[in-house]
Length: 474
Ligand code: ADP
Image (tube, rainbow, N blue to C red; front, top):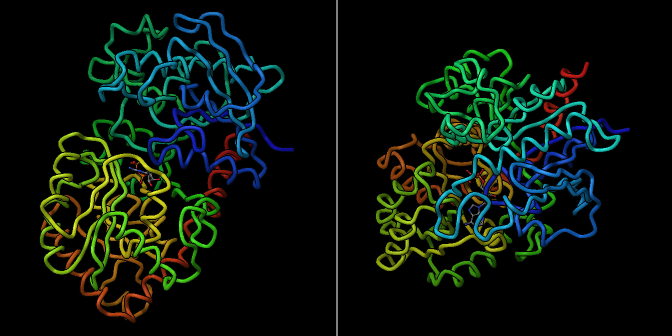
């Protein structure tokens, strides 16, 4: 007998993904099943999701969900117990889950995700036939209003709120409270008010019984003004219910021995073919130096503007760089220009999951120079695929990579290179160290081997989530 949990998120692998949130939300049900927890995951029925659905049953019908009819469809998809909110007036549009075709936020994003939360609260109250969750697990601001609606309905089920990135607050003008069906009496410092606006994330943080974030390092950082993004006071006030549980990766989907997108390998030696193929794909010549890769959203957070400044020196020293990413238009343009002017740099603007697999398989190193990073997944893929992570010393990056300082190298335990965040000079130094270590064959192989052995799955973290759930229902 599994114990029922309702998970609520705006994206979930394998149905819809724009970033790491989807990977984690998609991996948790599998990770927790063995511990006896049965997660059903509620997400919006974007066109891409609706197109992937096979036979589904209608689990709940809502006559009017913020301006139109809606229903919740229940189905199994690729091992996932999915609940899909089909509300065409909110989700049947071209574009990404959050942005229109021009790259702007949908103007009614507050309402779209409030609808997800409203439907979740109905399910938590037992509206879906006989199924009633023992725990409700919310992910990021898109699920943040659930406790408000549960309180309005008088539903008492323990709630866990997981912060994947505190930079996104889900703000709406106070004048939207009526449209969103929120109780104005809760528009206070202790409620969902945030500097005169409605904050969906804050609603989740004040309404949840437990708050988790995706690494112990980020959990500590969130209590500070530098990383709390204006919510550090809320986090500090709730300190006793906050914990950091490190993300894992789906080691079934990300396994160099079985990955269908690559030339499979068991040991780092098997990377050579993948590296040649990757060089060819990016029009890069053969070279003796390391091929570094980046797979990332292009945003201020990811520090790829700093890399633009550091990369000419890296290339001059014999390194090469292949970058796959999309996002900020100015960064896309700058990186496309870098690829034209620097012979050792290849750039692909876009989102391409199979190519991402080939990049981790073919890359000698994976660069993650983020200014802040709640957990980060690409450094974990790097470890698993025998690519050496070169990462900023922040959040989950610092929790998952063992820096190649003299002591760690001597002890033979290093897995990568850490550098101070938000510092071009430190990044350039790290790239210099990368070149030097790559030239030291024994040290390099040792690091690759250490990385491939480093645990990056869900084993210990799924136990931590299971213990958390258990503590709430005990
Ligand atoms: P974030 O969630 O902040 O974007 P993470 O490192 O946690 O960062 O997760 C990013 C996820 O998105 C990883 O699975 C990464 O491989 C993937 N990804 C990012 N950009 C691209 C892209 N352009 N093409 C394919 N996959 C990408």
